[in-house]
Image (cartoon, rainbow, N blue to C red; front, side, top):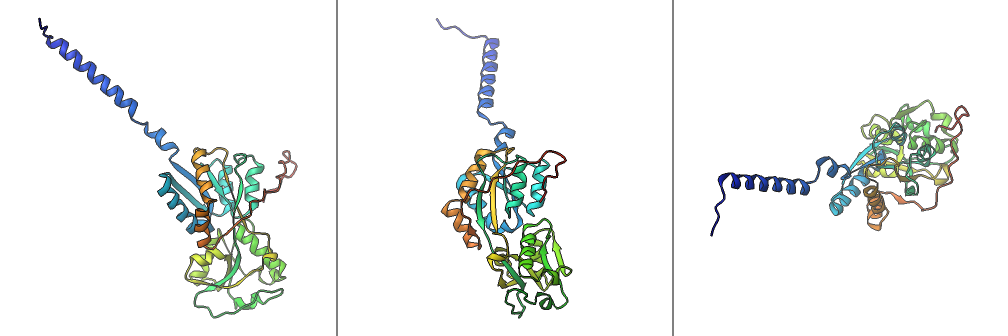
Length: 290
């Protein structure tokens, strides 16, 4: 005997079936906020890294599917933003001091800091310049400016500016140009002053000169005139996507990543462990601020 279901029974079955389908669909669908939370790796990087790091990020994204968002500025500005809880997963500084600054404040993920890259310091002029100048102790930099300004990063906080000041002091020419500086917020801004003809000379990294066809390198500063130019990198303690950040940082140290940086003029830094950072002094003891 065949039993016929009443309309109410069939309607109830359809309702239950529909609810089950919705339940299975809900389980299978990712939650939008959670799915996107670790997808974008946020990097704070020194302005001089822009061209090379943009290319490296594109290659990594193509291989892994992970999105990279990079904010470029002076290392000093970025370190201060991180100290104020700006959201970032990775910090790449243009000098050791500003990485030390964050490490002293225990803002780095332990064991992730490494020396990533090296660079050179050069004297540049507009591409049309016919100036010839040898860098040596006491060289006539002030005369070469011919009444113009020397474009540099801020000598108080921007790493490229600090390296420039150290080199000029070592060469005994700082006093002759100290009042003839055009100080910029970051090294790329100093580069732009020369590229646009607003300054006849500037001091930037070799990689910056490579990235700007409107300038030419006049001479390279000897390595012994300034501290070694080292770009340390580290994952931040409050990183939202630490695992993805570790993968990207590891990629930057591979032969493939190194080749990208080399193409843009960077050298690879020796992987020596950084010098131990002294514990922060108690409040009121005059702790160092670079």
